[in-house]
Amino acid sequence: MEIVTKELFAHRDEEYGKFTSKLMPTVNADTVIGVRTPQLRLLAKWAIKCGYAEQFLSELPHKYFEENNLHAFIIENIKDYDECLEYVNVFLPFVDNWATCDQMSPKVFKGKLQLLGSIKEWMASEHTYVVRFGIGMLMKYFLDNNFKPEYLDLVAEVKSDEYYIKMMVAWFFATALTKQYEATLPYIEQYKLEKWTHNKAIQKAVESYRISDERKALLKQLKI
Image (cartoon, one colour):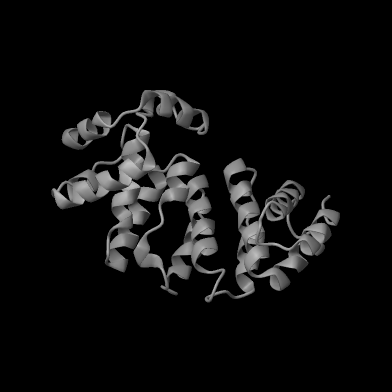
Protein backbone atom coordinates (compact mmCIF):
# COMPACT_ATOMS: atom_id res chain seq x y z
CA MET A 1 0.00 0.00 0.00
CA GLU A 2 1.39 3.36 -1.00
CA ILE A 3 0.19 5.06 2.17
CA VAL A 4 1.95 2.47 4.34
CA THR A 5 5.18 2.70 2.34
CA LYS A 6 5.12 6.50 2.62
CA GLU A 7 4.73 6.19 6.39
CA LEU A 8 7.77 3.91 6.51
CA PHE A 9 9.86 6.44 4.59
CA ALA A 10 8.66 9.18 6.94
CA HIS A 11 10.53 7.38 9.73
CA ARG A 12 13.67 6.69 7.73
CA ASP A 13 17.11 6.78 9.34
CA GLU A 14 19.59 6.32 6.48
CA GLU A 15 22.62 5.68 8.69
CA TYR A 16 20.71 3.03 10.61
CA GLY A 17 19.66 1.52 7.29
CA LYS A 18 23.29 1.25 6.18
CA PHE A 19 24.21 -0.39 9.48
CA THR A 20 21.29 -2.83 9.27
CA SER A 21 21.98 -3.88 5.69
CA LYS A 22 25.51 -4.96 6.64
CA LEU A 23 24.02 -7.49 9.04
CA MET A 24 21.88 -9.09 6.33
CA PRO A 25 23.98 -10.22 3.36
CA THR A 26 20.98 -11.98 1.80
CA VAL A 27 19.07 -8.70 1.48
CA ASN A 28 19.63 -6.14 -1.28
CA ALA A 29 20.84 -2.96 0.47
CA ASP A 30 18.66 -0.85 -1.84
CA THR A 31 15.57 -2.42 -0.28
CA VAL A 32 16.48 -1.36 3.26
CA ILE A 33 14.76 1.90 4.21
CA GLY A 34 16.21 2.26 7.71
CA VAL A 35 13.34 2.11 10.21
CA ARG A 36 14.05 0.93 13.73
CA THR A 37 12.19 -2.07 15.15
CA PRO A 38 10.31 -0.24 17.95
CA GLN A 39 8.95 2.21 15.37
CA LEU A 40 7.92 -0.66 13.09
CA ARG A 41 5.96 -2.24 15.92
CA LEU A 42 4.18 1.05 16.51
CA LEU A 43 3.43 1.31 12.80
CA ALA A 44 1.97 -2.19 12.86
CA LYS A 45 -0.52 -1.05 15.50
CA TRP A 46 -1.18 2.11 13.47
CA ALA A 47 -1.92 0.07 10.33
CA ILE A 48 -4.32 -2.16 12.25
CA LYS A 49 -6.08 0.79 13.90
CA CYS A 50 -6.46 2.65 10.58
CA GLY A 51 -7.82 -0.39 8.75
CA TYR A 52 -4.86 -0.83 6.42
CA ALA A 53 -3.66 -4.18 7.76
CA GLU A 54 -5.82 -6.59 5.77
CA GLN A 55 -5.00 -5.07 2.39
CA PHE A 56 -1.32 -4.70 3.25
CA LEU A 57 -1.09 -8.38 4.25
CA SER A 58 -2.57 -9.36 0.90
CA GLU A 59 0.11 -7.51 -1.09
CA LEU A 60 2.90 -10.05 -1.41
CA PRO A 61 5.69 -9.96 -2.28
CA HIS A 62 6.79 -6.69 -0.72
CA LYS A 63 9.59 -4.56 -2.13
CA TYR A 64 11.24 -3.34 1.05
CA PHE A 65 12.82 -5.13 4.01
CA GLU A 66 10.82 -2.99 6.43
CA GLU A 67 7.58 -3.88 4.64
CA ASN A 68 8.33 -7.52 5.38
CA ASN A 69 9.06 -6.74 9.01
CA LEU A 70 5.90 -4.66 9.27
CA HIS A 71 4.00 -7.60 7.77
CA ALA A 72 5.47 -9.87 10.46
CA PHE A 73 4.57 -7.45 13.26
CA ILE A 74 0.99 -7.09 12.04
CA ILE A 75 0.66 -10.88 12.05
CA GLU A 76 1.96 -10.92 15.63
CA ASN A 77 -1.09 -8.92 16.69
CA ILE A 78 -3.70 -11.31 15.26
CA LYS A 79 -5.57 -12.76 18.23
CA ASP A 80 -7.29 -15.73 16.57
CA TYR A 81 -4.95 -18.75 16.43
CA ASP A 82 -6.23 -20.29 13.18
CA GLU A 83 -6.32 -16.94 11.39
CA CYS A 84 -2.83 -16.08 12.58
CA LEU A 85 -1.47 -19.47 11.51
CA GLU A 86 -3.00 -19.05 8.05
CA TYR A 87 -1.31 -15.66 7.59
CA VAL A 88 2.01 -17.05 8.83
CA ASN A 89 1.88 -19.91 6.34
CA VAL A 90 1.15 -17.54 3.47
CA PHE A 91 3.96 -15.19 4.46
CA LEU A 92 6.79 -17.58 5.37
CA PRO A 93 7.83 -18.50 1.79
CA PHE A 94 8.45 -14.80 1.13
CA VAL A 95 10.79 -14.35 4.12
CA ASP A 96 14.33 -13.92 2.79
CA ASN A 97 16.44 -13.04 5.82
CA TRP A 98 17.15 -14.04 9.41
CA ALA A 99 15.96 -10.77 10.94
CA THR A 100 12.40 -10.92 9.63
CA CYS A 101 12.30 -14.63 10.41
CA ASP A 102 13.49 -14.34 14.00
CA GLN A 103 11.49 -11.27 14.97
CA MET A 104 8.11 -12.73 14.02
CA SER A 105 6.71 -14.35 17.14
CA PRO A 106 2.89 -14.37 17.23
CA LYS A 107 1.57 -13.89 20.76
CA VAL A 108 -1.35 -16.23 20.14
CA PHE A 109 1.03 -19.18 19.64
CA LYS A 110 1.98 -19.22 23.32
CA GLY A 111 0.65 -22.28 25.12
CA LYS A 112 -0.86 -23.83 21.98
CA LEU A 113 0.27 -27.46 21.90
CA GLN A 114 -1.30 -27.90 18.45
CA LEU A 115 1.43 -25.61 17.11
CA LEU A 116 3.77 -28.60 17.23
CA GLY A 117 2.15 -30.05 14.10
CA SER A 118 2.89 -26.88 12.15
CA ILE A 119 6.41 -26.73 13.55
CA LYS A 120 7.13 -30.21 12.17
CA GLU A 121 5.79 -29.15 8.77
CA TRP A 122 7.92 -26.01 8.75
CA MET A 123 11.03 -27.94 9.69
CA ALA A 124 10.45 -30.30 6.75
CA SER A 125 10.27 -27.41 4.28
CA GLU A 126 12.73 -26.79 1.45
CA HIS A 127 12.80 -23.06 2.25
CA THR A 128 15.67 -21.98 4.50
CA TYR A 129 13.74 -19.46 6.57
CA VAL A 130 10.65 -21.65 6.92
CA VAL A 131 12.87 -24.30 8.52
CA ARG A 132 14.59 -21.68 10.65
CA PHE A 133 11.22 -20.29 11.79
CA GLY A 134 10.03 -23.77 12.77
CA ILE A 135 13.10 -24.40 14.90
CA GLY A 136 12.73 -20.95 16.41
CA MET A 137 9.13 -21.60 17.43
CA LEU A 138 10.12 -24.94 18.97
CA MET A 139 12.86 -23.16 20.91
CA LYS A 140 10.56 -20.38 22.10
CA TYR A 141 7.49 -22.36 23.07
CA PHE A 142 8.60 -25.94 23.78
CA LEU A 143 11.74 -25.78 25.91
CA ASP A 144 10.00 -24.84 29.15
CA ASN A 145 6.81 -26.30 30.66
CA ASN A 146 5.82 -28.06 27.41
CA PHE A 147 9.20 -29.70 26.90
CA LYS A 148 9.62 -33.32 25.85
CA PRO A 149 13.01 -34.96 25.18
CA GLU A 150 11.92 -36.06 21.71
CA TYR A 151 11.88 -32.42 20.63
CA LEU A 152 15.67 -32.50 20.77
CA ASP A 153 15.61 -35.31 18.22
CA LEU A 154 13.47 -33.23 15.87
CA VAL A 155 16.16 -30.58 15.67
CA ALA A 156 19.15 -32.93 15.75
CA GLU A 157 17.72 -34.67 12.69
CA VAL A 158 17.66 -31.46 10.64
CA LYS A 159 20.41 -31.78 8.03
CA SER A 160 21.33 -28.78 5.95
CA ASP A 161 24.33 -26.96 4.53
CA GLU A 162 22.50 -23.64 4.83
CA TYR A 163 24.32 -21.35 7.27
CA TYR A 164 21.13 -19.82 8.68
CA ILE A 165 19.64 -23.23 9.42
CA LYS A 166 22.83 -24.55 11.00
CA MET A 167 23.08 -21.44 13.15
CA MET A 168 19.51 -21.86 14.37
CA VAL A 169 20.15 -25.52 15.23
CA ALA A 170 23.16 -24.40 17.26
CA TRP A 171 21.14 -21.66 18.94
CA PHE A 172 18.40 -24.16 19.77
CA PHE A 173 20.81 -26.57 21.46
CA ALA A 174 22.61 -23.78 23.30
CA THR A 175 19.25 -22.62 24.65
CA ALA A 176 18.25 -26.19 25.46
CA LEU A 177 21.44 -26.54 27.51
CA THR A 178 20.37 -23.56 29.60
CA LYS A 179 16.82 -24.81 30.12
CA GLN A 180 16.97 -28.61 29.90
CA TYR A 181 20.59 -29.37 30.64
CA GLU A 182 20.31 -33.01 31.74
CA ALA A 183 18.24 -33.99 28.70
CA THR A 184 20.39 -32.04 26.27
CA LEU A 185 23.92 -32.87 27.45
CA PRO A 186 23.94 -36.40 25.91
CA TYR A 187 23.50 -34.85 22.45
CA ILE A 188 26.77 -33.01 23.03
CA GLU A 189 28.57 -35.84 24.80
CA GLN A 190 27.62 -38.30 22.05
CA TYR A 191 28.40 -35.85 19.23
CA LYS A 192 24.99 -36.15 17.59
CA LEU A 193 25.35 -32.83 15.80
CA GLU A 194 27.48 -31.96 12.78
CA LYS A 195 30.93 -30.67 13.81
CA TRP A 196 30.40 -26.96 13.05
CA THR A 197 26.96 -26.93 14.68
CA HIS A 198 28.24 -28.89 17.68
CA ASN A 199 31.03 -26.41 18.34
CA LYS A 200 28.82 -23.38 17.73
CA ALA A 201 26.21 -24.70 20.18
CA ILE A 202 28.91 -25.10 22.83
CA GLN A 203 30.28 -21.62 22.09
CA LYS A 204 26.88 -19.99 22.49
CA ALA A 205 26.10 -22.01 25.63
CA VAL A 206 29.40 -21.06 27.24
CA GLU A 207 28.61 -17.40 26.57
CA SER A 208 25.35 -17.71 28.54
CA TYR A 209 25.11 -16.40 32.09
CA ARG A 210 22.47 -19.06 32.78
CA ILE A 211 24.99 -21.91 32.74
CA SER A 212 27.26 -22.52 35.74
CA ASP A 213 31.04 -22.28 35.47
CA GLU A 214 31.30 -26.00 36.24
CA ARG A 215 29.06 -26.90 33.33
CA LYS A 216 30.84 -24.46 31.05
CA ALA A 217 34.16 -26.17 31.84
CA LEU A 218 32.69 -29.54 30.89
CA LEU A 219 31.21 -28.22 27.66
CA LYS A 220 34.54 -26.69 26.63
CA GLN A 221 36.16 -30.10 26.98
CA LEU A 222 33.59 -31.53 24.55
CA LYS A 223 34.51 -29.23 21.67
CA ILE A 224 35.74 -30.99 18.57
